[in-house]
Length: 40
Image (cartoon, rainbow, N blue to C red; front, side, top):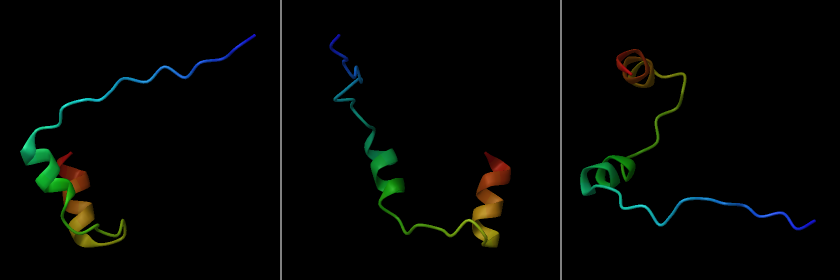
């Protein structure tokens, strides 16, 4: 039996999202990450 991986795409991503993702990665043990996590 053949198996297929069905994934959506390509998916358009808003420019504001791309800009937010291009920033620095925050470590998960920093106060900045905790603040964002709490807001989410």
